[in-house]
Image (cartoon, rainbow, N blue to C red; front, top):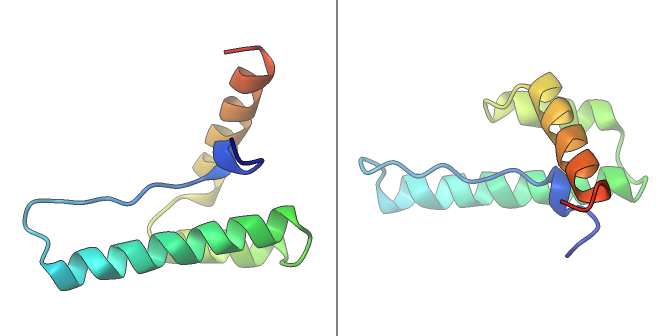
Length: 78
């Protein structure tokens, strides 16, 4: 498991998405994952990541809470 696995986001696919829509979603996912890894490595300010998440329709505060929950779950042996 990667050290950033508990922090990762997901791509959202809906039946009405075209191939181009799906590619844009994958591109956004990749961009988010790169930004998360950069924050963890200390190469990117977390505010930049929060802005990126918000641009992609992800509430940054909910993402932080979910990431903390994921880390606590893994630390407990879950």
